[in-house]
Length: 214
Image (tube, rainbow, N blue to C red; front, side):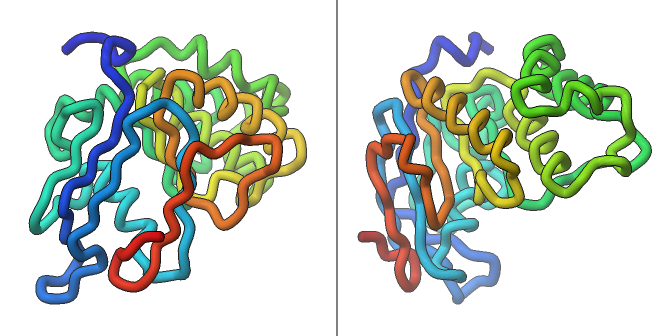
């Protein structure tokens, strides 16, 4: 598989109908394109399909009809794993494992070295916690660690659900800085009701009933 950096960053969703229970679609005939690097905001009321979109991008959920392609690769293909990073809202961590070991495990699972992830700890205010078990971390620090783990690989597509929830000021500033950099060469999807004014959003998709967008 070629390095992820050799791919053109893009998400193409074509006439997608999807959901979790047959006969009750959450998204119905959804089409949208994110075919240039930048920040793409997805907003909408609860139940409008925002998280369903995230799961389609992740490949965990497959559409009943239509297609989801990341950098030209079907999102359900094993190869798509090399071009995407997805961060859900609920961290999946081991209380007794250290911050260092969590990042090392995440890096190993993505077949990358841990150095870049460990270097980001200081920016997010986690350097002093590197050898501490996760059980010692505050809710905000857990959220920051989870973000670092989910984005440990350098991929052309990044999707984050509620990126600023639970973040302290230092974490928000660090994330704003990184998002600004990523937007230069990645397609970054932010599922969020609000976006800090320091960030420039290329396009906002507002989800309405049954996956309709505005």
